[in-house]
Image (tube, rainbow, N blue to C red):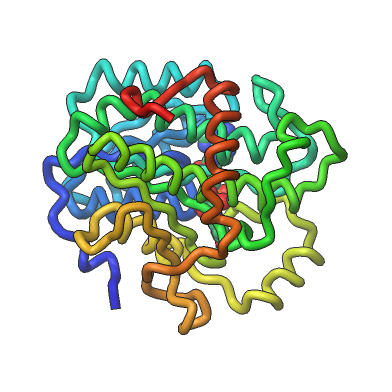
Length: 304
Ligand SMILES: NC(=O)c1ccc[n+]([C@@H]2O[C@H](COP(=O)([O-])OP(=O)(O)OC[C@H]3O[C@@H](n4cnc5c(N)ncnc54)[C@H](O)[C@@H]3O)[C@@H](O)[C@H]2O)c1
């Protein structure tokens, strides 16, 4: 069984974890810090990032910790974070696109996207794009994008990417998490096409006790727990991200999730995605949309 004890020494590696101040992101950052990495806690609130840094230091690790302000609901903030990072770091070994929001009241990003689509997908698309040149220049680098089992119920509604229709929070969450997977796989195809060794992987953490459910009603939360069974601890939810971030066994464009044979609990395994998440036509169309929305085109030498 793969656990965080299997993480090889990460001394000399630089890792960014988005949404590292809470839940799965915090546990992901902790494990990599323990293993010796330089971990950048990229958080919406700098104050919360500093609090998390102190908590992590108290827990102990042989790596180093830094904080950065990153609000994924604003492309200006994403750009500012990336520019500051690029000025101060010669390498980036792992980018973990972990931050997320689920079923909030109707709200929009600075650019007018529905919050879940904007934060979970568009913000991470932009962040990855800004950091991509440094990832390319760093040997053995990888990008890990955290999706959700909710992708299975998701569909990309190209007539509603700018919230043209009524807001349905659950549908929007599932769409954003499907978008994360389509993005990770399309990115790998584009990276491979230009002959780069960078890896792009997608993961889903299973059902974990975190603050992600803060906007769910008690009834909806109870029904969800009845459906999926007892929730796992956040450290368990971090295992697929950690496996994808450090394992030598990962497959380019692979999707990792807690083992289905064990009820989506415990150790991470390579898993087969449902066919709609492997749809290359939809992925390309979504990529085109994201490029236009963010004004970013990458990989730089890729010709579609
Ligand atoms: N907890 C689960 O059961 C579960 C299941 C499937 C997928 N996930 C995914 O795991 C990831 C981590 O979620 P979690 O369960 O730890 O939830 P969480 O609510 O505990 O943590 C989410 C993190 O994302 C950050 N975040 C939210 N909006 C942001 C923004 N605009 N800019 C920057 N950061 C922002 C939060 O501040 C927090 O640090 C998410 O992508 C989520 O969709 C979680």
